[in-house]
Structures are given as structure tokens and as C-alpha cells.
Amino acid sequence: MSQFERPSDESLARCVATQEIQQLAYSYALAFDSRDISMLHGLWIQDVERVDYPEINIHTVREDFDQWLYDLGPTVLLVGNHVVNIEDADHATGSVYCLGQIDLGEQFVQQAILYQDRYARHQGRWLFERRRHLLWYGISTAENPFSQAPADWPAKTFGRGTLPEDFPSYQALRAADTTPRATTKQ
Image (cartoon, one colour):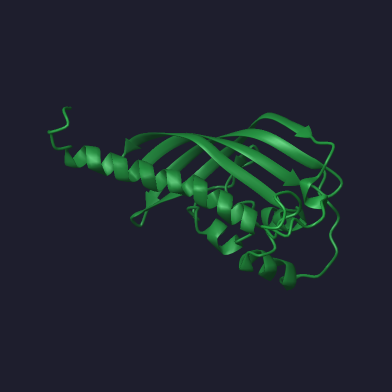
């Protein structure tokens, strides 16, 4: 197509669908890291059958998943490559690369993850049906960056920052239940 040709309605619809689907992966990372449980649940179609790990459906593993999110220390999910394959107007699949940095309490783990996703448009909105969490590798690091002294940014460029504790959703989750939790081991 030359620069002067108009894209077809179908091409535009595929571009919009791809962009909306890619936003799901970014929203998942933000909701996960900020512990915005409501936002996280809102990214998934609710009426699907139960699945087992490594497949994730937030609504079928909700109780365990919510507890796991509470038990985790701070996390950083960095979304990278995201290939989307539109199947039809209401169904798509995708592969999402993600680097995860996860505070497990006694361990700090870095993971290279490939999510293989299934998406569906539900009531006009693209949502996750399933995610397969596949691991390239996970490595425990010698240092936990969340154990550092405060950075007091911008005074210093290194040290512990104010996230995730500055997220209102993270604060609300921590305030909702003060029961001590054992650190999750993997």
C-alpha cells in the first residue's frame, strides 16, 4: 500500500484491535505491580471454565491468586515484545515477553517469561480468556533491591524508591488485612 492509499475499514479495525489487546498486557503489569485487584479482575472474561497452571484465568484461580498477590513483596513486570494474531472480529491470540522482578521475602527473583494468551471481545471490549505463563528462566539474585536504604529521589539516584507503597491500591490491599503472612516459596 502506498502512502496515498486509504487503509480499508478491515485494516483499521485490526489495528485498533491489536492496540486494545496490547493494552491488556500493559494493564495486567500495572494492576499486578500496584496490587489493583479490581483492575486485574476487570481484564478477564468471567464466564469461562476452570483451567490449571501454567494456564491462568483470574476468575477460576481468584481466591488463591488474590492471596498470592497479598503474600508477594513488591514486583516489577516489564512488558516487551507483544505479537497479536487476530483470528476474527471477536477472537485473537498473542505472545507477550515479560521480565519479572519479584520480591519473595527471603529471595529476590528475576524471571524471563513468555505469556501465551487467548483473547476475546466481550461486550465490545477485548479481554483475556487465558494466559499461559511459560518460563525462560528464573534466577535468585544475591541482593534484593527493595532491601536498600531509601533513595530519597532526586537527592540520590540509587536506593529504595517509594513504589509500590505510593499506589493507593497497594495501600488499600495492605490496610485491608493485617494478618501476618508467610512468604510464598517457589
